[in-house]
Amino acid sequence: MAAPLRTAVADGIATLTLCRPAAMNALDGDTAHVFIDAVEACAVDERVRVLVVAGEGRSFSAGGDFNWVLTWPGLDAITRRVGADLMMGAVQALYDFPKPSIARVHGAAVGGGIGLMLACDFAVCADTARFGLTSARNGLLAGIAIPVLIEAVGPRVARQLLMHGGVFDAGTALRLGMVDQVVAAADLDTVVATLARELLLGAPSVQRLVKQLVPRLDGMTHDAEAADLIGEHVAAQCTSDEAIEGMRAFLDKRKPRWAT
Image 1 (cartoon, rainbow, N blue to C red):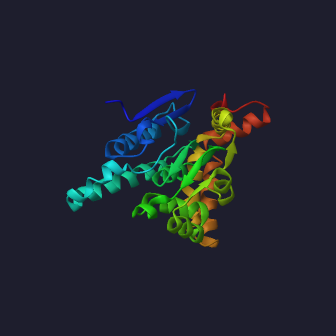
Image 2: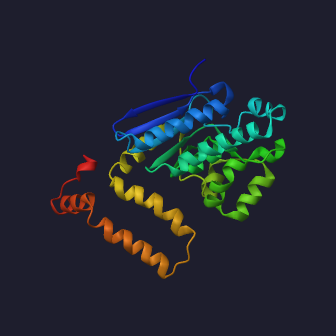
Image 3: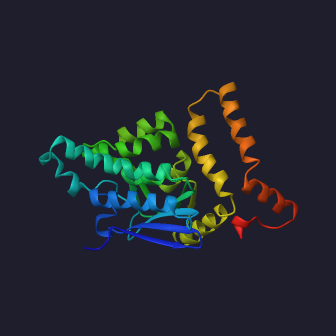
């Protein structure tokens, strides 16, 4: 049996490619487990500065594998919950990834596939891509996409998409804030590679800090407590090795060490 995921690392950029093209890169238990392990491995791999998530074949990802989920009624409740948690865990592992991440989206991104896309920090899609939170039309709940969907489009639009269940195009996804760039399909790899290289210019410690702070601050009132939290981190970051190197590099009119 072919591996459901391929990992490649080059020049600071790791690419995780879902390799179940016949199933439109849908997630079953094994695929989700392998995906989580790969994301966590990239998180601690010092060679990896940026993560790209992609799909092989005609589509990015069709979400949960129905052939797998159809086995659940014959399973006990604990085993069904393990399966659901594996799919949710794949999205959460991406969301918690401490370095910049990019979704390279082509073909179809449906249900949990949208969850994977929105769990990344950036989403670049081909102009031919199609999207859908179609689970309602299949009697299912696209649960693994809900938290990141609400963050991307807000609760009202999230409710509409999840209840309607229709398919929409790349232009609509851009208008809703679900993707960041729509490009010609022939240019997709070039644009993703350019963005990944641009992200390599940022200080790794600052990028990690941004990913920690933004979700935390999003749930806080803009008050003295939030200001105190930010002030604490700003003051600490200014004394870090990367801050000192970055400021000296600017004054010396050169690139900092992490960007060379």
